[in-house]
Length: 338
Image 1 (cartoon, rainbow, N blue to C red):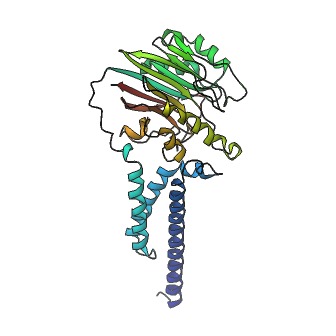
Image 2: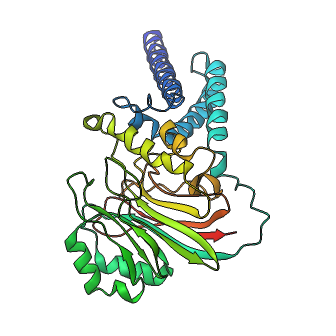
């Protein structure tokens, strides 16, 4: 026989669990809403303290909102569950709108394609990445233009020993300076390079090596970039380095620009969207091929490595690849030049 006291205690325990679950779900939803408001901060305000780190997780917060909405609709014990479900659904809708380009590809140019080129960008983690695997990836993926960041002289020697020149014989390698961000940025190419420079623009982070490649009569200027990370100790430097790269929006349009590298920012950062402006397009955000998280390599949670380009260029076949020794995944894409 069940005692009345036992029934009351069980009911009390259920009510307590329901109250705790309700409080937890509402608290998490409140955090998500605050994070989404932080995502709306304008350029130069989105770099304050831990704001960039929170905003970098935005796609995961959208997924969490969807889970909360399902819980609210299916678990009757949740307090004000309809209001919670409605608020979570609104968060999901806004998130989908923000990331629509990851789901549906941008309209392709009507111009006749003139050339295609397979490209890759890779942060080598201060030059400790596996040189043999890098060269194997170049060969297997038919990479024609390679941008790397945080490259050391030791890695350059190991790449030479592994025969990188057999596949990418042309290169631009700047001199190491005091302001380099973990190592130098480098650019390799299977095609002859013209108008090479070790420093495309004045910038407080690693110099941007750049060069022009002629692809079926079309001039395409490639650059390898690596602005500072948004750590609290880099207050202001993150925004400044991204703003410096944004100057390229105003450069002449006689040739198409393609910038590749570890931008230390995601599509959700206002500073990155400001960098793109109305000239540049982010490959990941426009290809409609989903998110390609690149950091950290073991369990990627943020898409901070990018390939961005001018109008008249389109990216397809995006992929990430793990290369031993680095805390980043390599990002690969096929660019169609119209």
